[in-house]
Length: 232
Image (cartoon, rainbow, N blue to C red; front, side):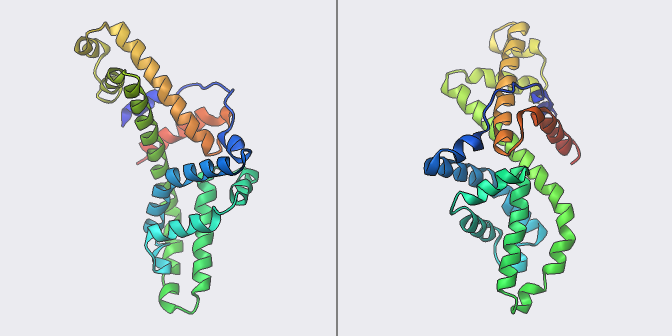
């Protein structure tokens, strides 16, 4: 959606990285980090496994592969701690990890000719599907931010502000038109949209922080997300 370009902008540099907090908080922090990871990345990873043929190469459903990957890696904090030391974005760490997991499954089944026969096809599609994975991740981040802000505003009795933002930035109605529809001036509509845009930026920034993006790189990452969407 073209309206998503409205969410780019500057961010403060005072947020603590959530992973630093979670991984330093013992078992409760580890559980929160694990839940975030599985909720945020299961969908993109499953679609990636299916599209590349990774799941077919081990004669499994994509969901089974991803569930097995999570079960094998997320039993202790060490997998996430190793990611923290790597300096990689979490999505890249997980994408590499799912390849290693499938390689381990194939090796364990190396006597099964039917399983091995799909390996070459997998390798041939990985490069193209890496870009698709990136797009899926971007869309999941945007969708999560949109849903969070809409829910937060509704919980505070301010659902009309979200509708005003949507009509202006997504449906591309003027502030004058939006203001008339909601019984306010064009200036009040603009102020409302500015506030909601800031909430969306903060929600996206929080997700990017959770992916390992440093504060000073967040704006560049968001601009890159916009390029990913424009390129498809």
